[in-house]
Structures are given as C-alpha cells and as structure tokens.
Length: 121
Length: 121
Length: 121
Length: 121
Image (cartoon, rainbow over all chains, first blue to last red; front, top):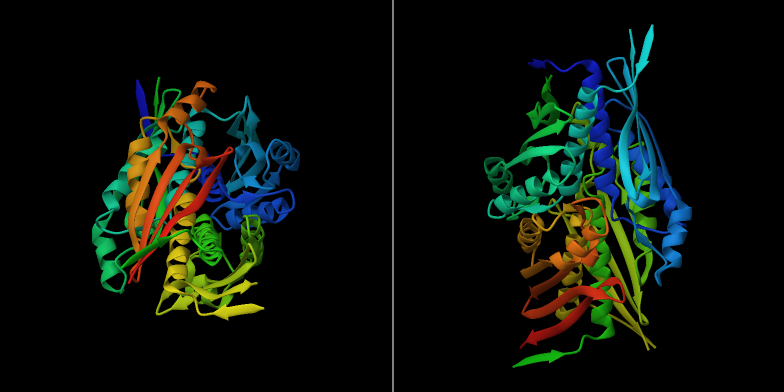
C-alpha cells in the first residue's frame, strides 16, 4: 500500500536543512583557498548561509591539516575548496522542529547526513 | 515535551531533496543566459543534478518569456540566471520513499517547496 | 595586413587580471548577502582571489547602500550577491608589469575595465 | 623608467579573454559530472560563456578518459568538475584584435594561457 500525505513540519525542516547544505557546498566549492585564507572563507560561508530562512546556526571548519597535506604534495601554495577540506554543522529551526545536520568525510567522500530531528510540542 | 528520535526514511528523503535543490540553484545561479542558450543550460542543469545520489528525475524549465521580458528592459542581449527565470521539479527516491519538490516564483521570490512525500510499504 | 606575434608581458598581465575578475564574479555571484554579512563576504572574496598567481591586491566593497535600497523594496532580509552591489579593484603584477582593473556600475551594468597598464623597465 | 599608458586594444582583448576563462571555470567547477552527462555540460558551458561580450567562440571538451580513470579509483559513479577534466579554447574578438586562449593540464595543474594575439590593421 502507498500513502501520500501532506509533508509534516519535521519533513519540511529536513528539506530546509538539505537546501542549506546544497547551497553552501555548491556556492563555495572551487574557491581558491590556502591555510592563511581558510579562516575568512569559513566565516563568510557560515555568515552567508545563516541568511537563509529558518537557518539558526552554521558552523564551518576548513580543515587546515588536510589543506596542508594537500599542498605538501604539490608545487602550488593554494588549492580549490572541496569536501575533503570541510567539516560543517547546520542547525535549522522550522515551526518548532529543530534539525541538526553535519557534513564530514567518510570513506573518502564528503557525506551530508541528518544528525537529529527534534520536535518541541 | 520534546522528542528526539532517529530520522525516518521520509525525513532523510526530504533532506536529500533539499540538497539537490540547493545544489542546483547555487551551482548555476549567475550563469550568463539568453533565450538562445536557455535550452542547453536547462539540459545540463537537469543532467548534472541527476547524478547525485537518490535523485530520480530533475526537470528544468528556463522561462524564456521572463528572460525576454528582462532583456527588453535592457541594452544587453543576455543576463544572469536567477530564480526569476526558473521552474524546477525534482523527484527523489530514498529507501522506497518518494519525494516530489518544486521551485517556482511566488510573490516575487523563488520558493522551493515539498509537493508530496509518499512511502511505499 | 595582419600581425600575429607572441603575447607581450603586458598582454599576459592583462589576461591574468581578467582571469581574476571572472573568477571573483562567478565564484561568488548568487551568495546570500545582507548588510550584516556583507563585510565577512567582502573579506573572503578578497582573500580568496589574492591566492591566485600574480595577484597582488584585491579590494572588495559590498555596497551596503545599494543592498539596503534593494531590501527596502522587498519582504526579504537578504538577497543574492550580484554586480549591482559590488565595487572591486584588482591589481596584478606579472613579470614586472602592473595592471590595475576595476569593476563598477555603469548604465545599470557591472562593467569590468582596465584602468592602467604599467611596465617597469 | 616606468611607463603608464592607456591600454591598447590588444591588452583590452587579453583582459576580456581572461574574464571569459575565469568565468567559465568558477561558474562550473564543482558541478556533478559523469561520462554520460559530460556532453550536455560541455555544450552548456560553451553556449553560456559565448553570451559574454566580445566572445567569438568557446570550445569545451570534458575529457571522459580522465573522468573514467577518476571514477575507476572510486566507489562513486560521478565526480565534481575540475580542471583535470577540461580542455577549453576561447577566442575573443575585441575591436579587430583576435585573441586565442587555451586551458589544459600541465604538471598536474590546469594552466590557462594566451596562444596568440592578432591585430587586423
């Protein structure tokens, strides 16, 4: 049997959280980054995405250890931002439903996942 | 009282759908576009995002009527892609849960929303 | 008659300056921005693009007056970054040739242009 | 001694060519791509950038050999577009000056360079 119902607030909150993650990643992937410029880029990523509706908090860590490891293998002193260099947590609050989401590397891929969905009622 | 449970498949499906929307919008917003080049851009947007996990179908319509209206007011023959020129439908299938999402203009803003969440069990 | 010669250092410097401008614009156009978050975005834009080869200095001003004017006409409290909100100066130094370039609005369009090309010999 | 003169048409043409390259790269870097979707992405990249002023022709080749090699090493069936997968030629015509530019890999880096600058007078 199949059920087709109007989305719940929790589902809408998860949808909103996904939008923020896709936005953050595809807006900033490819940006030239080095250990020196990682902090200002991380700050701008967090501030910019926090503008989006229902977005309570964005925490971006550009992993300078990974950045330095990548640059040690190369002749360049900067590289392009990609998931390998990022740890991100995004908290969305939609109609009293709080969703915590996180991106980190798993098996060599940046994995975005739902951490928790919490309704206040 | 507050409840904090592991995300359901439906919630994870909605999160995945949001990721696709945020990705599509922020990857391609700002692309130079004209009525002549709208079809190839729309095709690439759909094809590219369909690569993402759990993404069953992406339909992108670049609204040439709006594009022509914008260009009629200007001296340029192209503009930058933004939500005003887009209608998008994305269907995600995650562990037997199908989510249909849509973006269209509402009150002058591109609004992304969940259309339906359907579990097959 | 047509002449086809190896590019001069001045021409290569101008090419490099153009790359920086195109990069800056298309990397960051579409970013969610508000008067509060404009400063961190401007800082990240400048820092990021200064990583690129031969780039001596990037100065980014996000025009909060224009941003506030745009938001006053709308119900949203943020918008997407576009040329209307930007004034940028980029200085490139390539093999002893300094090129100064600038982007600002002219007749409603963000115009990127060469200010000066200076050889030191 | 230092000379500071108004830019020549050839220098302006090189600046314009650089803008197109930076735009193309930073607009599309990060796009999800697979061997199946490479052709539509390449077509959209060329069509979109050809909209820009003074841009006569853009040729984009997404290197499916490199794409397949990258995917063979991974468990994913798509990856993110980056310079490793691209060969691009852009021809700009500015006030009778034709500039040919090219991007290809060199020592593991995507190098953008001026091929020729040709004045017709």
